[in-house]
Length: 147
Image (cartoon, rainbow, N blue to C red; front, side, top):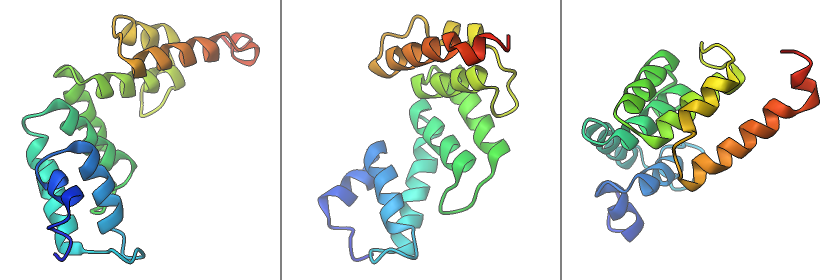
């Protein structure tokens, strides 16, 4: 693990979720020149450990399983983790599930009303942007004719 003394890597190992995500992309890809499987495994284990205490980390781990991670893609496990993170009030998980309702993804029925209800009281910048996007999408002529 020749990169472990890098300040960015130290932040990741210390539990910074953004740093973990970026570091996993850099160090877990065998096609990148910085490929370091031992460091990638350490970062993965750090994320898994954090996910037991932090709903946002749990959501992030769920996203990794859902969309693909260095250790495979297991969509049912990813969905379950994101649902559990939402129950534990992870803003990102709630937005993920609202998106699934909006577009009928991940086994959720298409329900724009439910999608908007899920994020209506969240004043975060991301939720505000998603509400605007959902409203524009649901009002688009192509979608109104199919209701």
